[in-house]
Length: 125
Image (tube, rainbow, N blue to C red; front, side, top):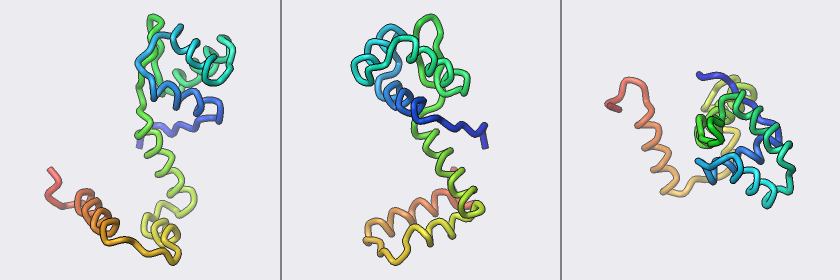
């Protein structure tokens, strides 16, 4: 798995805003963050630099672009949670998640399809 990236609450707030609006210029980002989050320019650039240092975004020539997508970050966080909480056991996680709940037929069919698509040794391309 690629490098583990943990975001602080402030980094995550800014990241979500960037993911929704990227690519955008640094000045546009500062204006957007000031309007949406009431942050000062210096705060925005400080947090943006940390996100760039972590490899989430790139800020080159006053243009902010995505390096790590939101879906990729969520997948990393999810895998880390299963690793840390369930020793990496997906069946233990799913058992805990269901905890007496029932799946609709549609949910069951969707999960079966996902399992088939990700099964080792299958005809997945």
